[in-house]
Length: 307
Image (cartoon, rainbow, N blue to C red; front, side, top):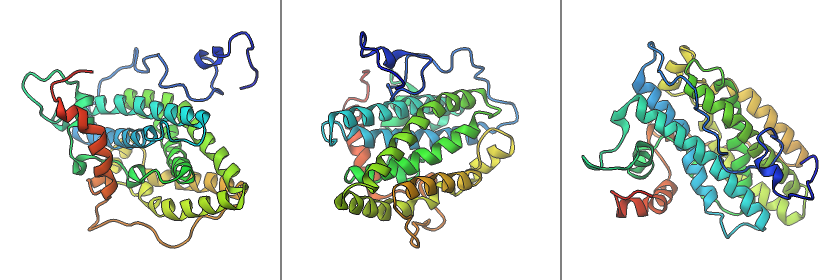
């Protein structure tokens, strides 16, 4: 923050005009208030739904991973920061899953004829792992704090570049979600970058852990820039973003951060596709099954419940 209010220690957290504060949940404003939710006539609604699932699942699974740091982070301040980054992403996920359901109701799992469960909750809690469309980077185990920082740095740098371009989407809902998300993701990226430099330039032990974290996480970056058929189709009509277009920006930012952190990006091994399929196609690591078992257990035990 630029200054401290000694009369009200919490004043900066709810100042809507201040974007230099640390993350504070998903805010209290409806980002879609007054937004035209009509899908452009020339847009394939099924493809739009799948695209929203991709972006929504990326955020949902990353949020769940960050939530696992509650009571486990190195310091209370970092526990709160990671939890609030997770809340930001959860807010993005909720909007995107709701948009997916509205664009194509067929994507919503059937629970019962009388189920009161909202569509976005049904998508979060009642799909199997092969129905999720997140990149595999998002589902990787948290590991130690260094591993989480590296994953968050890579994820937020990539997602920020995507959302920055998505603000000009012809679909007003995606543009509104992206406009709000850019402010949040800027903080997420900067938080991770600061910690990357702190740990990289810290003790021999912290440097070792960051080096090992990069070796573990970096091979999953290639998947972030693989364009699916839906992304290409929707990018062609000005609705989506071709992920290949953000590679140069991503590489530039990561080079700057890693240089400041006195670290090197690993060369060589990349996690490729299996039979041409990856996370966007429902092909995931074993880790996703464990994440979903934890995340979905209560909802599946009480499928008609409202919370």
